Amino acid sequence: MLYVRVKGTNVLANRWLAIFFLLVGCAMLGCILENNPSVKSFTWLIPWSEATRFVMAPALYFSIQHFVQIRYQPGWRMLFHFVPALLFLFVLMGGSDYLPRGAGLFVWLAIKLQMVAYWVAGMIQLQQHQKQIPSFSSNTAKHSLKWLQHVLWGIGIMMITQITTSFFPILHHPSVYLVYLLATYTTGYFALQQAPIYKDVPFALVHNIQPTVQAPTPRIQTVDELPLKEKLLQCMIVDKLFTIPSITALELAQKMDITVHELSYLLNQVVGQNFYQFINHYRVEEAKRLLRSADHQHINILSIGFEAGFNSKTAFNNTFKKATGSTPTAYRQLVVHMAPSEQ
Image (cartoon, rainbow, N blue to C red):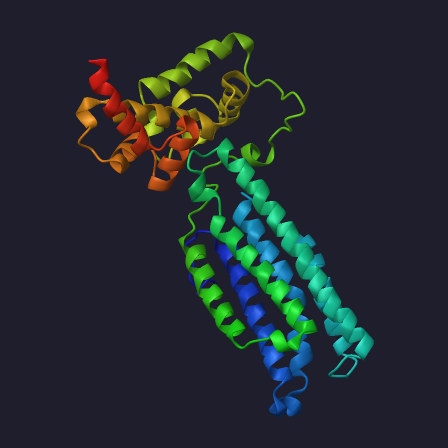
């Protein structure tokens, strides 16, 4: 379903993910065939199923790259990732269905080391992506790919389990195949639900972020900083653009008639906040105002969060508590108890 169902969203990422799970299934099939007496007449199936294992790790890595990068085009260089699998197939052409004992151990170690290396590389890419989100989005939960991070941790556990059962076969249990099936369907569901991450986000904004240890090149003349800052504040205080749950850095920059790079410089160097921090500061202040308002005492907490621009209860509670030290409910109760004493 991941491979065939195409909506124009994360197509390549989903297809590489589908290939990964297909190859994991082939590897598990090889494990089953090894202990099946009837496979003796089809001994060639086992080494060929082993060859597919060299493709698993690159498939997972390419899926992650397509998810987290705005424009990932590996080109012909991607062929280098499949060199181990091609070399293994070349060895199989010697005519033997099984490798010598020493060579078999080498292949086993190579597959495990390859998977670990690609797993670490994929996790690093995902963490770097999560650090970049606040620079262009006020809704980090929508773009954080937390589900993919959970998938990676699950794969890590599966790798440890597989290596452990290789040394201690008594620990192997058939239920592992049911876990794989459940993981496949669960991952497929979240992958298909994932919205495009970098829609309408300029390539350079994501991939040209200056290191914090270096002074960034000024994108705004000093004389223009104050007028632009006032215009930015007008967009928040008067127009209340922060109440739009899906507001992005690009949309705010267009409203101010400046480039997204100039907006990024204005926020980071003049205001001293990234886009996520800046937008959510005004959302919290708006929520506090509504919670204090006598006209809004009959409105439930979640509705106030939505009115302030938050798109979920979790995001509202977490952001509000981080900024104020208390939950929205506790804040309202405190305001209600203080109101009579102030009269």
